[in-house]
Length: 465
View 1 (cartoon, rainbow, N blue to C red):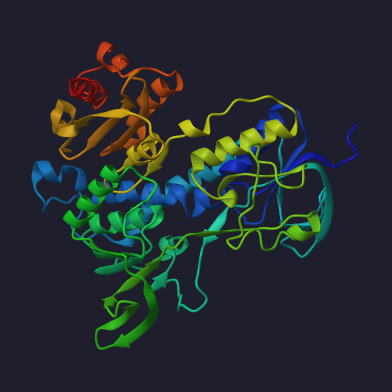
View 2: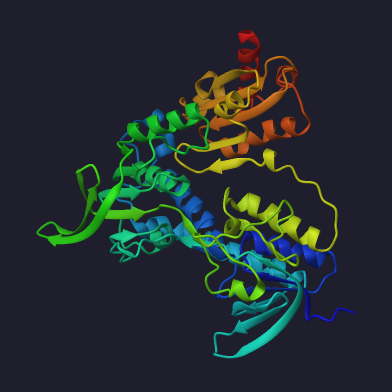
């Protein structure tokens, strides 16, 4: 019999925490999840992944963006789109996902404890309950899956309305006519493209000279082209010096001063320069742990911290900070904690970036392969080359296959365009089995589909040889 109250305590109910808890429960362990908020799901369901992707779908539908190449740039499903229109769909999906998550935990007999957790020592956790009560619980193993919150600069005038972070998006009172996004990371690019699709005049600022440095250069350049085509002004290589709110005859606005001397006047400013781990209230030092300057925890290949019985998974350990990878990290951490052998191939994790247009990739970029001295060739196919692309009205999408010059083994797939995050999984499966580009030539795909892009790109690549 265990001398602890629980075999595993998971702090946080986001994707990593939920998957870790259910995995341990399937192993017939006694599990508890501690969630300080009144709803489960963490940032993923309540403020991050699910809201932003649902908001994106609402934007694409109501703005008529997908149909413009067929019916013209003036086409819209609704002429005057409000935040209420966008949030109507979002609220429905959030409520559904919260209910699904809670149901999954309940039916796997996971105890859901509503409290703020902090360490007393490596095996003891103090619970500060909403009604003011306190209790201590003990755990053989702990998984920290507390996620992150948007990073803020204390010197900036955040008010949640005119100067806000991505966590405040769902609380906006109205759509602005102009918006400046500070930070061109994944979140910044996603929201910049969404608001631009609605007709908002967007300025995107980043001190880096390139968009999304971890993305293949050609794909990132294509995204930059699409953003500019939607009237987004890119201020790359520029740094923000200060921000102030002004209230004049034109109403409440924001003035942004750049280090270069430029000034930008905008109705609203979205500050998106990264996220900080939710670890400050955990009392990590009492468990023998410490976080970095962004609140993130360091772990080994098993997601084990410096203290052997304490694991961490999800956004709180940093890049890639995706819901999909967080789920897998949580599962793997739980398996390792109870001695279950698993196999994972992180280099084959797909990345999905829900900009407009969508980006997805699996495997290394051309730049990474060049730096590693790997001889490769590329095959490309554009959406406009397929009947399905014409039917959908997406003539600008691109799929790129990267394969070894000598063995023809597939090395990577990079996609930008409608449905990219779904399309990439065909290539992911071939990569997992060390398949060659010839597979796509020998395979018959449904017609008309975007999957045909793989065959077109494969022929293009072999013709280059």
